[in-house]
Length: 64
Ligand SMILES: [Zn+2]
Image (cartoon, rainbow, N blue to C red; front, side, top):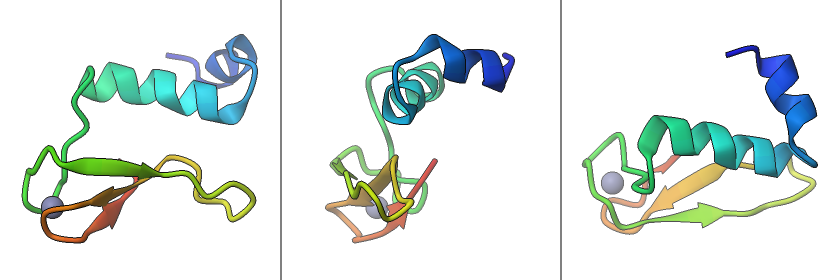
C-alpha cells in the first residue's frame, strides 16, 4: 500500500491509522507483550500519540 495515497484517502490522520490498524488486526487489536485482547485506545490528541494503545492485562503501551 502507498502510505501517502492512504493518507490522502482519509479525512484525518486518525481515520487513516484506524484503517491501517484494521488491515493489521481486523477487529481485534492485541497486546504484543502478553497477547491479551483487553486493550484500550489511548486517544491523546496533540501529544503525537495518536494510535497508541494500552493493555489492561499487563499495563504495556504500544503503537502496533
Ligand atoms: Zn499485555
